[in-house]
Length: 448
Image (tube, rainbow, N blue to C red; front, side, top):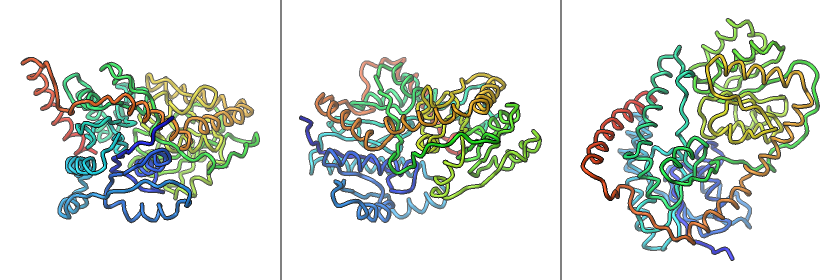
């Protein structure tokens, strides 16, 4: 019989109704409270949103307990004034370690779990307490291939190049990723790319998507086969790494009369508008700007296919929302979207040359234009994938299985900095890598 555990969840980002990482932290906390006695360590800044969220839950729903912690008022001012969110996160994790130690002395946890931030490049407060711990799902190892870097957009090019270099350094044998994985009883990867790198270091790293939704809360109404132009929808930030230029080139090359509605804003909006005009498709591309989430959710049923050519996206909330609304998805074969878009519910275009990617996207658009019955068939299959793999209640059950196995194994790793058997040469190499990693990390932080 499954044992009810005493669990501490570390969720720096944790707020209901905010989407993205805050929603991830909130949902994992609620799900695991169904099965275990859960304490959530999160920011004091989140309390004004969390407390009303807890009060709004049905009386029958188990509730996690929350411990709120933030840095000094001065640190908060620096964070807000200088937009030093990442630096503040590092400070928070450092001091949160002491909070975890105190809570463990008081409550004697069976398991510790870090859920947000869900990027592998950041430290966590759960390591080194003599308790089995789960790290993740974590992602972030997804990088833009050299041939697809945004060479025409210098700022994006510098950011993506710096990020890719930083990823390689972090994943090197003597740097952070293997050390952090070794300090965890279980590492969960949110993408195939992340799992692949962890496996190279000898860690099994099961793939568990970090994101989910409540399938019952979205309409499952079948879409009729519509006449007229195929209606494509894109929802997301209009920035280079999301591939809006790839979407427009593919639409122009598809040889169809399909239309594209783009919902979102970003530093590439003006360039994307100009590109649509230059390609002669401005009359078939509608820019709706940034819309409230409630309005976006009402939009999905009005479209036929979701187009999302993101070059690296660990999650992709818009993708699973579209799939839940019975839209097949055209995406690139990378990151979180490629994990969700399984065979028979969309098209995953392989990464390759820029021309090859655009051609692949264009063929996918043309294929749906020719076969409108396929739109309905694959849309129904997309909904099935969400109900099976991305519904929060199902994900909670899957995570509970991992909790039970991890607690039963009683595998207690050492501290993340603990290295044994390192010779002089290895220590010198690690020191050199640390200097490079520091430089790359600062460059990435400044450019972001």
